[in-house]
Image (cartoon, rainbow, N blue to C red; front, side, top):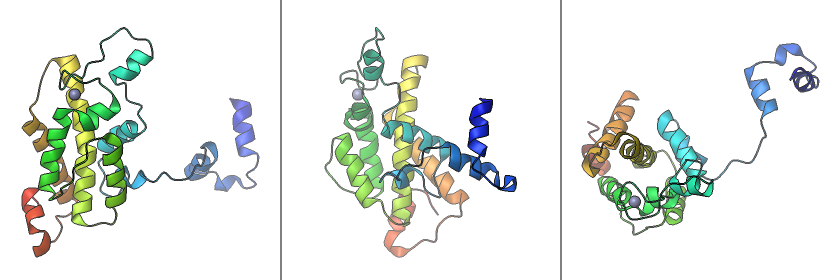
Length: 203
Ligand SMILES: [Zn+2]
């Protein structure tokens, strides 16, 4: 470790430059930004939502299909609907529980589309959630909130034996979005989007 540290600092001619940012820039692999980073890392993001969403997008959560692939002797049935195979794509897009939650969120955002697969929904979000409008901010917070609360609900059912309804999960998402946006200073109400403010309690 000492030798690795010596090699890290050797190229730096000026010790006064060695601060947190310099070390961070030099120890990580710099790769091109992915086209979805703004979906989860944006000024009003909620850290715990974004962290779980990041792991969902990378398919790194310990969903049952992955645990079985790793050799665990468990069933692979989705704990939310009891019928599908628990995978990233099922749990966060195809599962009737997640679909119902997301459907209610979309109606509250005044968005209509007919997409059912993880890939199609993800691509739609990448293409359509651009800019800083109130609708874009709400949908980003709500979608990352959906991923967070669906994963939390899966864990509560699996490990605690407790169950929340679709309405309770939707209300948790709405409350988190409302608190976050109001804490940043409730946005000015515009007539064109007044129903959005009403749907999300932003007044
Ligand atoms: Zn399911």
